[in-house]
Amino acid sequence: MKLHFTKMHGAGNDFVVLDATRAPIELTPAQVRHLGNRRMGVGADQILLVEPSRRPEVDFRYRIFNCSGDEVEQCGNGARCFVRYVHDKGLTEKRRIKVEVAGRDIELDLHDDGRVTVDMGAPIFERERVPFDASGLVPRKTGNFVLWPLGVDGTPIEVAVLSMGNPHAVQRVADVVTAPVTTMGPAIENHPAFPRKVNAGFMQVLSRDEINLRVWERGAGETLSCGTGACAAVVAGIRLGWLDSRVDVNTRGGTLSIEWSGDSQRLGAHVFMTGPAQTVFEGEIEL
Picture (cartoon, one colour):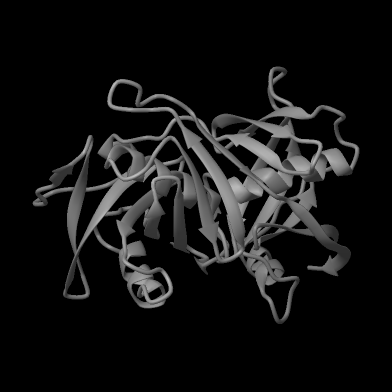
């Protein structure tokens, strides 16, 4: 089949976006991998499939596929590209959009300067919902949160564990430039404590309102930016006592602004992420 696609990126995290609002599109894992292939396909970290809403109170539904072919739950940078896409394509005139993704609803606001704010919902801390198997592990309490000890290829590390609709393990490092992202990241991703694998974040705290971040994403490897990873790092840093409620997150692809007003009494507060979303090019591909 021949598909029209739009290539987009949010802070360097890039996507192939497909419009399935007029006719359904069913992709096999092999076709998803082909689209994501940077040499033989279009090339992207993830594939976004825009679909019509299944419920009257929601404007759209969209699905997210890693370039490995697996469908995943959430992608913050993808959400920003999604709202730019549906607005630029004339699929809606609304500047505030409610969308269903992986069984949860999120709200997105398109600003006049082209940036997008995403209501990422409340972070998830219950271990069984992450999911995270802490059998045999004893955490260390820090601030209003805990750090979990993990053995990774013989190296002991401590990680904060939480979910932003997808699982994250965040560790603090002295310098993200020299952090072992490409070697330790895959080992954390596949650690047996995470039955559905995990995104591995490496956070360098510069001040109480600024961090540097690199993320090894499950099923995608290291990306230039990870929106849910930025949210998870900031929420963990706030609960651990390292960060204030608004933080600029410097990724290799650009800067995201994250806000979370939660504390030990307000763990259900929503996380808000603001950042860019841009179209790169459009085309057609035969699958």
